[in-house]
Image 1 (cartoon, rainbow, N blue to C red):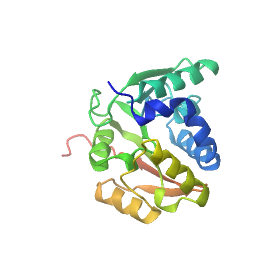
Image 2: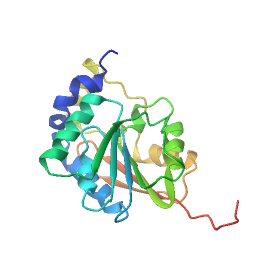
Image 3: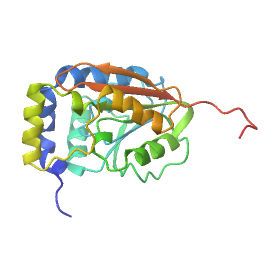
Length: 211
């Protein structure tokens, strides 16, 4: 199998993230804060695992997944250095998750929706495995609001093979979430050179006997 863009940059990914550290650190901290204490958590498109690492003090078991094995290896090394044994790692395609409906009390997919041809299909699959009463976390880079430094960095990424499909702004991202049919979505913006739209959606508990 040929190496993807994400496979090739796995060793440099954290360095690139450092250029946008205010937003990245704020995103990880806010995502961790939203995880119900003691819940099982699934992170998809985890990259090098910053959100899984940040959520470790709050969640029970964490399954940290990505399509790129080199990215997962970076995440595994970081978890080992921090002595975090409750995080498991697996290669997963977020469009085709093998987990049962409602399997996780917290589900997160960060900074991936803007890369997908059909992000609404990914959201539907992530929502499927979110437990009633649990939370779906969808922090997403607002590529349409990038500052000058990040625009230059994104241009360099493109030379290496990076391709984004969506240029979300806070307005267009909110509109996307509404079209995806997510109920009572809370959307806040985490500032940085490349801001993050932090979407938090709690899945309703359907009373027994209701359709």
